[in-house]
Amino acid sequence: MAIREFFLQTVMTLSDALDVVRASPDFRLLTRIPETLARPAPDDGPTGFALIADTETTGMDRQRDKVIEIGLLLVRYHKASGLLLEAVDSYSALEDPGEPLNDIVKTVTGLSDEHLAGQHIDDARVMKIAEKADLVIAHNASFDRPFMERRWPVFKDKAFACSINEIDWMAAGYASAKLEMLALKSGVFYDSHRALNDCWALLYILALDIGGPGNSAFRQLLEQARQPSWLISIQVRFDDKDRLKAIGGFQWMDGGTPPFPAKSWLRRCRDGAERDEVLERIRNEVFRGDAFDCQVGRVTAMRRYSLDQSGLSLTPLRCGGE
Image 1 (tube, helix red, strand yellow):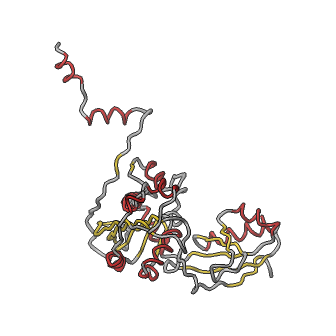
Image 2 (cartoon, one colour):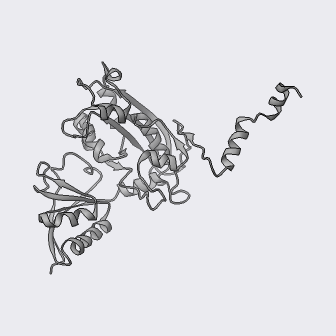
Image 3 (spheres, rainbow, N blue to C red):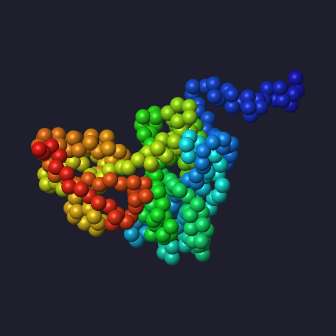
C-alpha cells in the first residue's frame, strides 16, 4: 500500500480524535467560552437588564489607584425565572493612567505601558450602558464597585451583586470561587484577566445549572441579591484578636471608613442565618461563652460593597446578655 493511501485511511477526523480523548481517563478537553448568548424569552413576566462589569486597575487602593481597563456586558434576563436571555450590548476600553504600571499589574493583566499609551475610556458610553441596568454584577464587587463609583457616579445608585460572595459555590461542588477555577471545573477556558473576556466568562458560568435543572448560578445570585445582608462590627482586646481572626472573614477598620468605629473589625454576612452563626462563634470562641457587645447593620444591594457607607446605620447589640 502506498504511504499516501495508508495515511489517508488511518488519519482521524478531528471529531474522531476528540471522541478518543474524551473516552480516556488520562486526558481532559476544554472548550473556549463562546462570546454569545441568545435564548427565547418565556411568554409571561417582565424582563430586566443585568450589567456584568469588570475593571483592571493600577493597584488595590480604592481611593487612589486608577482604572486602566473596563469591560461591560449588558444582558437581558427573565425576572421571575432568572433565565439569562441575550447579550444586548458590550463595551471594552483601555485608559492611559498617566504613570508607569508596576510589574505586578503588568503580570496580572498582561497590559504594558505601550498598550495604554494614548488610550481613553469613553465615559459617556459607560454611563449610557449603566443607566439601563437594574442590577450590576461583578466577580468581587467589593473591589470593582468602589473604583466604578469613584469614576462614574451612575454606579452609586445601582444595586450590586457579587458572584463570589452571593453564590454558595462550595455547596455546588466547586472548591474555589476564582473565575478561572470555576471555568476549568466546568470544562471551559478563556483568555483571563482582560476585562471583557472576564465578563463573557462570568456570563457563561452564571448560566450554568449548579443546583439542578432550572436552578442556575444566576438565579441563586438574583435571589440572594434581593435579600438583605448583614454587617457585624466589633472591637476586641489585642489578646483576643487572633481568636476572632480564626473565625474568618474579618476586615480591620482603622477609622478611615465611617460609620465603622476606629480600630474595629468588620465581618460581612450573607444573610441573617450566617449573622447569627458568626455571633454565636464569637461568643464561644473569642469570649468563652460570656456576653459581649458589638454593632450590626442591615445592608441592601443598593449599598452593598459601596465605597460610600455614610447612610448605613449600625445598631448596638448585646449578645448573650439578659
